[in-house]
Image (cartoon, rainbow over all chains, first blue to last red; front, side):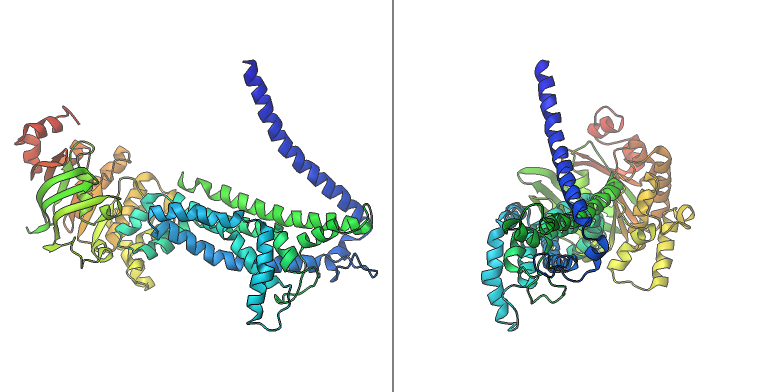
Length: 290
Length: 251
């Protein structure tokens, strides 16, 4: 029985490691940002409309980065949501079982493509293609980055939504068919509403994934913090800024260096809130069919 | 009384397995017919032929004819959705939608394109009254149907089927998940309903079959062994197998 104890200990240890890692990350983020906010007020951080910590004339307003992040994220979700849900409904309600078995894993490959590949795809293919319709579009822009990011997160929406639809008891589908409903009526009047919590969760997770995405936006959206909702001009996202500073020659311990922790904690708050919302929704609607 | 439904030389296969062997059977209008027999005898499969619910089962194949009001329903020109609008079905386990009681009962009506609120309200009320549920839920129509008890849920499902005013109701062991009191209510209801509806009910419960049905058909291993008036089946069956089954010697 000694063996069991050892294995039990190992399991406990690996569980602890993940928790400790999270705590460690939080600690570093917090301690560095606290020292940042002792020099720059939170008020300035939130209300200043410019983000120029690396220039001579320094401004520390996070909003341009937040805006760039939200802009690319919303474009991505606007692409992924309709396509992903359509795919999910098709796979769960219409497609033959064998087709679904083949297509679902294929779709998930989309999420497995290295994001740097997507970034270059956005920059070298999508942007030139869009420029042929939109003459004024600049080489770096949130539109093509957002679209490509949307393609990347399609499987998050489609797979999780499909799981949610498949989890709806078959008896509901039978009840609907039994009433003379068509497949389409059954899908939209019974299955989608019944799976709505799972579908919402899938969208939130995709949203949260898009907010945290780095490579695509760093490559294709540009590195110019700008408070705008114009999708055709370069912007910078929070993640892209963190990359920029981490790779650059900013000295450790300086205020410029600490900006990435302030940006990091902003990002963390966003994804933390989103993950909690999805956790709450999942928990709240879970009992419904038990 | 007319023949409302008819099965002619029906054979059903699931892949290689033959589930029903050459069934010929007629159902009288405005009567309750009970289908009895041990598990796996094909009675549920047979029931689901009449609204084509087996169509979704992989490898399902049928030979022969099913007639509703004298018309074949397995011919190519039949619109399955339209067919089902005239045939209500109540399932083994209560399966209300995760919607309000009102929305559940109004579902079939809305599918048929009825949008007028007053009409919907009226028909929902009538269906709930027919299902003997109105008095219990009339103040809670906006409450989720999932909050009701099992017996109430099943009556919501019956009301849902009745709301579209079908002429036929198929019931697949409708009380198997209910307690005795709820079962008694549903049985009473079936008794009321047969004035206006042709009802086929699959049941495992012999007493239930003898209490509520006018005709009883005994299935065994995919064969229709015996089909007769219920009192004859239960007092003086022709076949020994029927006798053995209803007296509880097997099954």
